[in-house]
Image 1 (cartoon, rainbow, N blue to C red):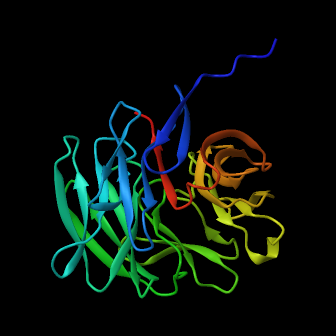
Image 2 (cartoon, one colour; image 1 turned 135 degrees about the vertical axis):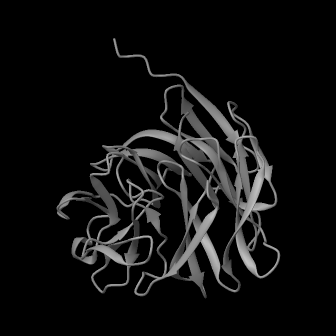
Length: 295
């Protein structure tokens, strides 16, 4: 007799034509999502704590709950005055607006450190990455740093220990560069491709996920040993995109199904082991799911 499959709960995301499939002991859950409502506007939705219900926050285009819970960072649809801003909601939902960069510079890609104490946002000029903004949430201190040679389409993210910032850099062979928070280069990993996902580091921090460089053109993604910089394995499947890691041996990726796109758990041989969400006949395009650790 085969083992009984864990019971799944189906949650339909409002207005998104996307159904999320969750199990009671999932260690990652969809806590927010955003969807394109026009060519120029994206609306964000936040999950109600302890419920399977999401509420729309029309004044925000992105909402990202902290990994440890309690706080949410939001990118407003617009910021008054000469500066752009990010808004931090505390556990009671009280917002605090924090200035980031002077216009016309823009910021994108809200990323929390794993301990939930710091944020990094990527600075853009003319749609190209030019630097980063770090924020100490408790102290409300902000530091903006401009760096050269970054891949124009990359976004900064924290290393697992929260000490450095990782980003793809514009080398002809493609690579990853780690920066100190003052903008000095800490380490460069050459010819490994560009990092991919909201958190490219595995849960243990021992592996790093990249789009394989041109020398491995037959593969989609490469996993690298962080300490040695050597290739650990390649995942030979063409995904639509990858959000990051499910656990140490699986990825969360968007793949094309028979008649729709699926968000799925993928093993390191490229096999779908579980479907986490699906859109309905392609109607969910333009939807971005935010996965954070369960409480």
